[in-house]
Image 1: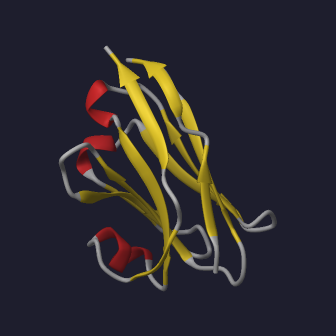
Image 2: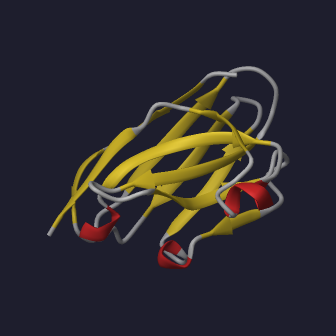
Length: 120
């Protein structure tokens, strides 16, 4: 399985970005994680293989939306009302369970990250 995240960039606080994660191979649950400078990589959101179940970390609830288009084998993270503290490298990851991904475990594959920078 290969994962490729893209769509990052520089945006002002309050703005929006949409990240995409293109996957090859079979359908997996997908998670988005982020790593800010000097900090550990942390969970952001996950979605089940069918798209019926989603999880979010508390700090992004109501602002970020995870979705997927299985016909295109592509997953998305719509990020609205961005804050400077959202600045990080964002990674998509594949696993067998969106629930496990939400706990930070169960990652079978990592994609390369994409940088998101939110200016104040």
